[in-house]
Length: 273
Figure 1 (cartoon, rainbow, N blue to C red):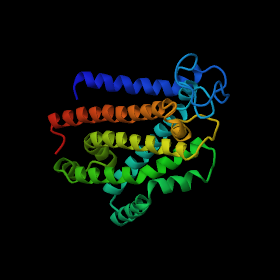
Figure 2 (cartoon, rainbow, N blue to C red; figure 1 turned 60 degrees about the horizontal axis):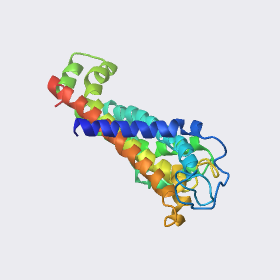
Figure 3 (spheres, one colour; figure 1 turned 120 degrees about the vertical axis):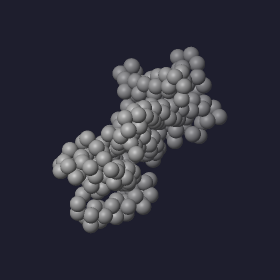
Figure 4 (cartoon, rainbow, N blue to C red; figure 1 turned 90 degrees about the vertical axis):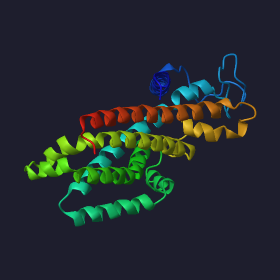
């Protein structure tokens, strides 16, 4: 990716994140009160027109991203941290039967369709954004565990890790100095993938009405609510959908670039095999 494209991707991602996080503070007045007829076209006092109930689309776009982005970020962090710990633990443990048994449990969870698992977990605590974030994290952990486990097992079999074991270095020292540096590029790239998946699931949860309910704004729910008025005013659907795409793709590109630079540095240092 060229320098110009990296700048565009990074700037666009940062702009969407800022819009989602500080947007609610920029809105004055109620976002649930109708201001004009439904599906009024863009222009005049309503820059993006109105939605299915005649509410201002711009105000709902500004307030509809924060919960979704926070859900995706929280779920990604939780899923990546637990996936990293469990993936490493199952790969380096001396109790292989325990590690294999844990992997079988992980595989069983991974076999359940993510959307079905999300519905079961999130519907247990209706109206809670935190429950949705936790459910998305639980859905993503099995895949993170598998990716981290395989890479850690490959690193643990390298000569320099075996040499460290022969020198009598402790397990924490081997993980810190010999495994984590080589694992970092994969972990970063995997985090990017998990964030995209978390964003999609958070949007899907909003689309399905999970988490905080109406009249709270949510980019995912806006797509569902206003799909019937595409021919009259498409902006209530197109704008939140476009913001979700820019955010997901932008974060992936940024993390891929960071992972690539990390991997390049490790190869130059001869630490990766």
